[in-house]
Image (tube, rainbow, N blue to C red; front, top):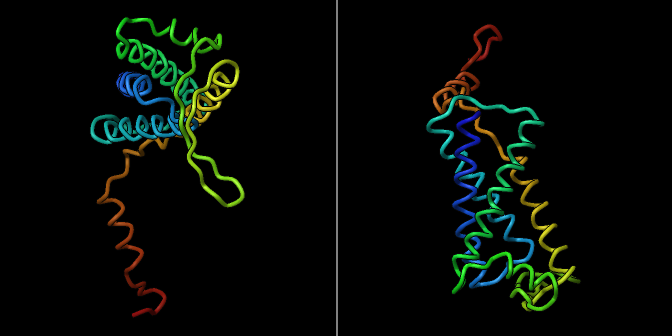
Length: 176
């Protein structure tokens, strides 16, 4: 489990670094950034674990803590990546100006109302910007917590054997 935890921290940091850089130059993809990032993290961790780790089946408490650590790693790296994208390294100042309403973060997303899907873009700042980021982080946390941990005790050959056994005839029942 320790190896999975550390690999998840590293993958979360790399995805966060890239997301921060893209977020500075492209904008905040409202409510989808967390979904995309958390699914990418879960997929990459799962791909790694299928190759190298023993079977993992963490308890809910462990999964909650692992998801929180991965989320914090993502956010720290995203802030750092956002700072690297700037001409001067000042990511906390950038977020501070947005929070105070002195600046706005370019944002875009999708909205569905009355059967119509519409794209929107604009700039958000202040309390509404904080609310959107909290909701996005909560969605990301949910996806990381419910990550499908690979059951590495089963192999594809085990599945094939079970399927073959289910498709065989049962002579005791008189089937032929």
